[in-house]
Image (tube, rainbow, N blue to C red; front, side, top):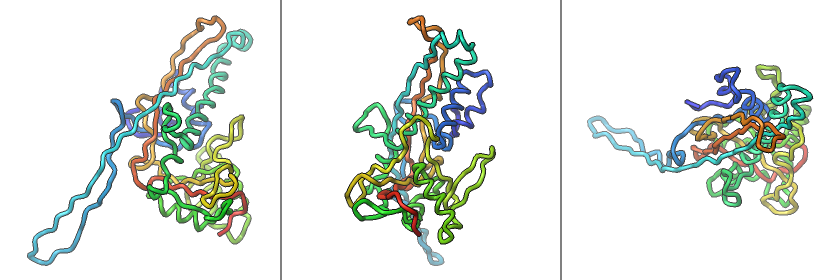
Length: 313
């Protein structure tokens, strides 16, 4: 991938006969987070970047007075990538019954699971507990970094306050999207029917006619659609005020260069392995060396302690 771009944009640039193109398209189509997240390439052992730590000083000067001086400060940081490597297997008996075209359908089905793995890690990844994965949003949006806001301080949390969400949005530099559970998204749809809350919650259509729900002009992402997957961001978190694990979080993110973006040592690669040594399955090896970078101090904000209830102003 020569420049920062999303996976759908990258796939469009591949030859239609490329073995990777349909697999990447399926991978991206199954997660709206993967569709929207830009990826940047790097080389070497780690991605090296710099974060701003001091913006310096500025001031007016009098006539005939010498110019002042200013010098900002930056701090270097490193992130690394982690390989996802899978052999997609299709039983030769399936091909005998349905032909070679069926193989692509079977592999596409398995790519959905790869998409779920990345999406789940994007939210819940914790390199401390699992050294094979990158840190997700929960591990990065900490109170110590000024990236955590409480929707409520009560035990068991409280229904989403739009005022608290507005604060989380304001705490994020150049916000582009909101990430939440499908159940939480339904609460926004219900709020559209509440005349005291309407106006900032809108449902439109994208370029292919798919409905897009947004709040404050920020599209709402929910990960993967209804499928045989576990739920993304369920109501199973303990609120900041304690109590039972009955709350969820909403993330405000800035998907862009200089904000929150994916990194990859190499683009998704696929290799047809033919009939495997087991003489039963045809195999396709799909590999991707991928990670996540939060370049800006305020590129993500977590709003926690959100209970399952009707949204309030």
